[in-house]
Length: 511
Image (cartoon, rainbow, N blue to C red; front, top):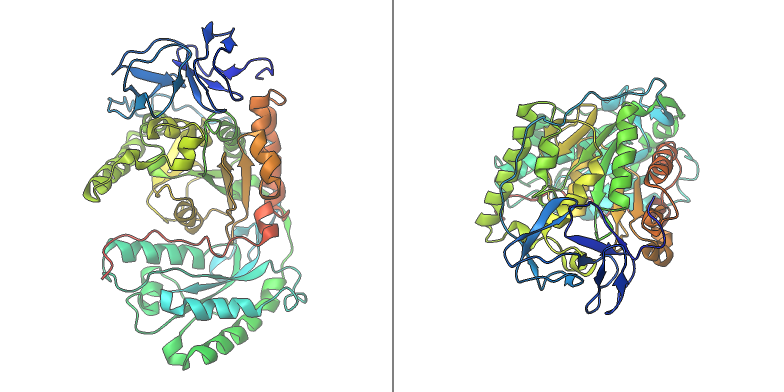
C-alpha cells in the first residue's frame, strides 16, 4: 500500500520520474528522492529525479515514455516543454511471459438470464432489453420514434424488461457495398442483433440504401423470426405507418421478453469490455491496474475480458505479445499495429496525435506514456486471441480486439463481439453509458470522485491516497461486476445513458 506521507509516487527504482500526489510548489524538498522542486508541478504530473540529457530516453514503469527534447534537471516538471515522442525498437519476445492460468476450484457466480429460444438460445444475458436497429441513418428517426413510445409508464406492466432502446448511426449508404466499411458495419449490426442482452430485435431500413436488409441478413447469417423482425419504411408506406407498425411488433415481443427469471450462472458467462477515457497521470497507477487485477480474478474464474483501443496501446504492445499463448496470436496483434501506422500515415496524421488535450492537462505527455498505463487494464494473464473490430469473441480468458481509441466506437465493437458489460476508467470524468451492456465507471483520483460521484461507480483514488491497497480495491471491483451482472443498476443506467453511444466504426470514403 502507498503511504500518505510521501509527496510523490515512485513506480519503479529505474524510473527517471516520480508522480506528484498533490500540487507541488517550487522549493519543496522531496526527501525520499533527495531533490528540490523547481517551479510548479500539478497533481498527477511528472517530476524528474535525475538529470537527463537532450535526446536521451525518459523512463516511467521502467519503460520508455519519450525522449528529452532538451536537458532536464532533477526537480523539474517533465511534460510537453521538455519531453517528446520518439522511435525505438521493441522486443516482442512472443510468448516469453506466458504461463499456465491458475483457475479457482470453486468459480464465482452471478444471477444471469439464460435465453430459452431465438437466435441466442442457451446464451446468458446480464440485461433484458428489446432493441431497435437502423440499417441506415435514413431510418434513425423512425427507430427513435418507436422507442420513445415505450415510456416507463407503458412498460410498467413488464417489470422484467429493462427498456426498449433505439440504436441508430450515421452511415449505411453513400459507401461501397462490397468494401471494408460495409463489412464492418454489417458485422457490428449483426453482433448487436445476436446480443444476449436483447430479448428481441427490430431492424428497420429505408428501402433503397446501400446496406440492404436482405444483404445484411445474408452476410451475418441472420434469420427472421418472432424475436428478430425486419421491415423498411418504403415498403410500409411512410414514417407514421412505420412507427405504428414498429410499435405493434414490439408490443408482440414484450410478453416474451418479460417472461424471464434470473438464476445462478458461473462467472465464465461474463464478458467484459475494458475501456479508459479522459485518462490522467493517475490512470496507470490506480484505476487501470486495479481493473487489471480484477480482470485476473475474472479470468481465473473462467470469464473473458476484452482489451481494445489499438492507438492507445501503441508503444506498449510488446508487453502484450510477451504474454501471447502463441507466436501467431502475437503476430496478429503486431499486424494490427502496422495497419494503424499505415492508416495514420495515409490520413496525414501520426500515432502521437493521441493523447488528447484533456489527457495532457491530466499529466500524460506522449502516447507511449498513455499506452503503458492503458495496457495495465488487461492484467497479467495470457493473451489468448486477437480479434478484428466487432468480430464474435469465442475464446475464454484475456483477449484483444482491434478498435479505435475513441471510446463510443471502441465499446460498440466490444459489445458487437459479445461483451455483456463495460468497465470504464477515467481520470478527468466521463458521462458514458452503453445499452444494452451495463457500464461501470472507475475514478482514478479522489478529487474526481468527490466532484463527479453521481457518475462514478467506484473510487480507485484511494490507492494513491494510501487509504486502500490495490488488491482490496480489485476485489471490491470484481464483486461490483458480479452484482451489476446480476441486475444492480450502474450510475449511467440510473441516468439513462446508453442509446446515443452506439457508434459503429466508419471506414472508407463517403460517396
